[in-house]
Length: 199
Image 1: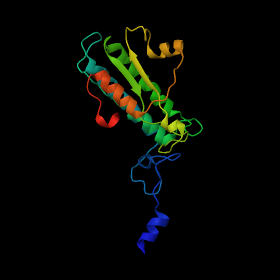
Image 2: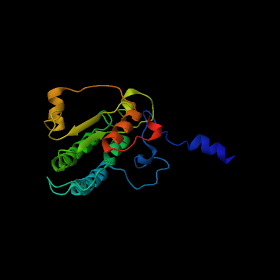
Image 3: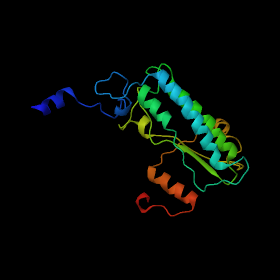
Image 4: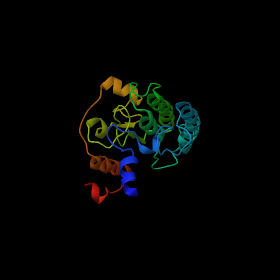
């Protein structure tokens, strides 16, 4: 019957530990409908994306030193995740090192935000997951579940320098926190009650 063919000849790519996200399969992969996923095409797309992101990330804050226009501003740099899924995060798999390139491009956008925020603004940088070396996530290994979180405020004794300089001078501080801790911390910073499900 037809279902036997589906099971034995069309098994979908698994999305999980050590696999590539099914939406980001290279061109030529059976069942892949997009025209190309060539690294050169991705690089050109990244240039356009970075230009768009940089102009939009800093603009909500107005000119440096101006009053911030938002009480809460959230941005998600999805191309970092896309590079990890598509090409992997280590040069063993990602020979062009596009993952590190995407991260490096985002540091410029983050620096724009740091330059524009005032002394009362808390900058939080985190991730929703990690990647295995060849790209992908969904498993239970530490590299997937343990992610960094950086809290930074200008003009405070806790953070007298830019985040990178501060971390270099102090050294990293490690602790284990749950997502529920993160949600409660963010709502406390915003001055709103923590959602019941996070306590």
